[in-house]
Image 1 (cartoon, protein in one colour):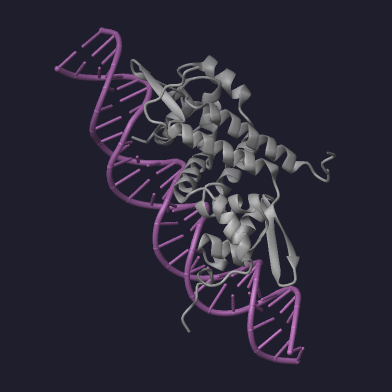
Image 2 (image 1 turned 135 degrees about the horizontal axis):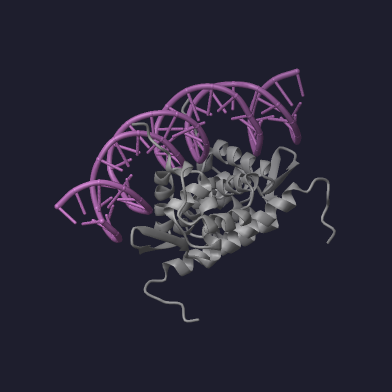
Length: 127
Length: 127
DNA sequence: TCAACATATGAATAATTGTTCATATGTTCA
DNA sequence: TGAACATATGAACAATTATTCATATGTTGA
């Protein structure tokens, strides 16, 4: 028998689906959102962002700080630059990178807060 | 000649590295953070989270709403459940999922704000 | 107890992606 | 001009992962 993808069939609560579907962001926004979070989904990039939130740094020093090859850092910086999360300026041979987005700090630290609360064992919120 | 990973060598601005390295979150936090963002880095999961932020829903309806197979939805819900971003309750045959984290809403909407500003063409901030 | 239903899950596959290696580009200084 | 240096980038490889397929688990009602 051919398989029937059940998402093409009926629903159990049609009203719920109708209501929720009206509040969903459109498909393009969702894809952009996921792409943005992909940039935060790698530990090397997260470390780069934390470093650049504090100060501008050149590629060479980032490589040393994070113990990652110059090439790898450079590849990751390009991704962050394309997304306009970091910017750069050249001073002679050296290229300095720095944070270019005031949201990054907020998002990263909010997520850190989440993790801290997450890890608290056996505690209920007191309200 | 053997390759020399340049991140094992000297630095250009030692003071900068010393200063920044003191403010960096520890390695475990960074890895947890990246793992958390991995969950937001897929459009199916983002859509699930947006839906469950509005109301609880059963797997079958989520599958219909998102036009994704039941199996795929179930797999993704397990990841979100393991991370405690969603919770579930069973009522007979039906399992209802709902958001289990008040940070998710904030993070997702903050990122949406970021994208909106990002896309504004040729406008400078007015301060 | 058994059929129908809703959900969960293991294995396999295809696609994505982070790093490495080799090399190119761009800059300085002698 | 050319050597040394800092950075960028293309190709290849390895690892991760989202989905599909097949099937298992758990629940209801007859």
